[in-house]
Length: 377
Image 1 (cartoon, rainbow, N blue to C red):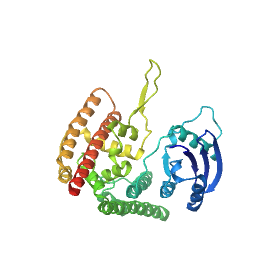
Image 2 (image 1 turned 120 degrees about the vertical axis):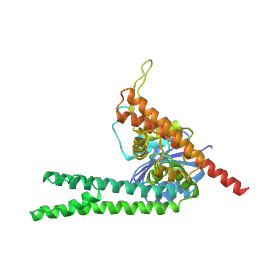
Image 3 (image 1 turned 180 degrees about the horizontal axis):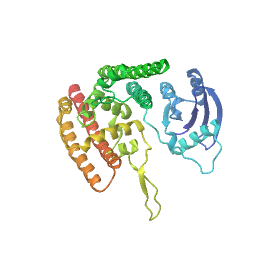
Image 4 (image 1 turned 60 degrees about the vertical axis):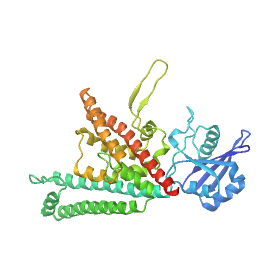
């Protein structure tokens, strides 16, 4: 389309710096506007027809509210990955105006990489899943504070009491310190541990309720992913919340790169240098997959819990999951036999596990779409 204007926005909580790249080549700053819906509307009316505008801004703490506002106004907008914006060597001056101009210039040149913007259902589910993750981290901190407090005072759990089991907590509650301040400290630490456990249970119950309200297509993918060993309901929901539409990845390798479990590379000419994983992708997804990969250390088997999950999935998903058990376990054994440490072997297994996640997710989406077509016919 001719006469398209490319607009770069440097978005902050209270202000937005605006720059526009004209079709003729000029890139100029338009100053700042308040980060308010009415100000954004006035800006779009000032710039011209919505269909002739292309707007971009960096992904950040302000989320996707501005994206939805611009979409409602009929403006095509992209949220771009900040880490993939080209940088000039030696450029040490950074201001909101220069950032907005650079966004507009790079957007016009096609040098920016857009991120996936979740819809309302995906974003709501992701917020809930990440709230549970925050609760788990708080629980770990609370437990560490309590255990280190007991260790400092030489209080050791009795034999046979596994850490944080019911027997262990009963023993902690029976402890008594002569100093009132220490007793109050113990009670406070114990209260925080119990509160964290109640908070996690409450959030997991909320996740169960949220699943029932999801679109049928999303529920189908969540159920299919649970056919894999090491991926129960919370993990499947977390993967769904972080990835959204599996089919947006054309190949499994793209999903592996998105998760950051592929090796970084620094090659030039005849020199090829590869190192550890890039960690350049979605850290939440990478954590979930690596945790699930540890279960493939063991020989292929289907326990009671996995069998119960697979009874709710399709035959194709169960077959892929069984194939994954054999392939990933063999991969782990081979890597350990070659002298790799467990962490390296598990990371390699996690990378291949993403391939099976992609295959099962795409198959579940395709099966759902086929059912919808048949019903419509």
